[in-house]
Image 1 (tube, rainbow, N blue to C red):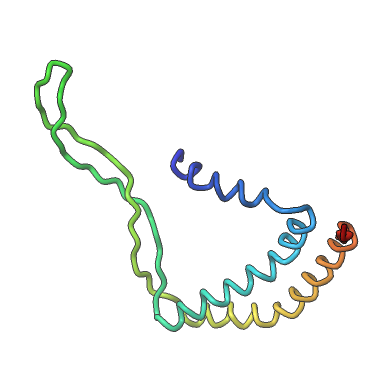
Image 2: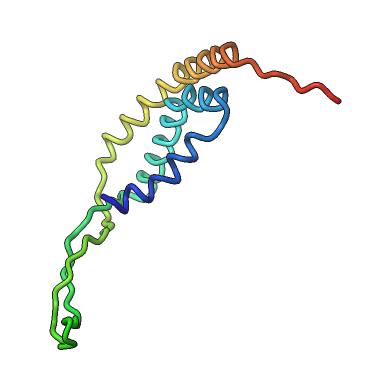
Length: 131
């Protein structure tokens, strides 16, 4: 959990960056962008015939440890390791989801454009005057 937080910390900091207008525009386009990314993932999975799934497994290793007095002994160390596997896909379900996304994209595009227009109205860009 702690490692996951440390990995996400820079991403959180980057998300907080940007002007209010940039953040608003990014949030307005998120559903449309997510749908496009999902269609790309579906196309890759259909092309390969499988998808990748990552899970975590407990791994126990034995190594030499030393007591405070210097005596060596075997100790067990447990860690969680990521394991990525190939998983078969349900091609019919993916094709149906892709078709649904294709039908939804025009509406998502219009909604994103409308929301971005509202962002531009709410956060007008001040033009810099030449000195």
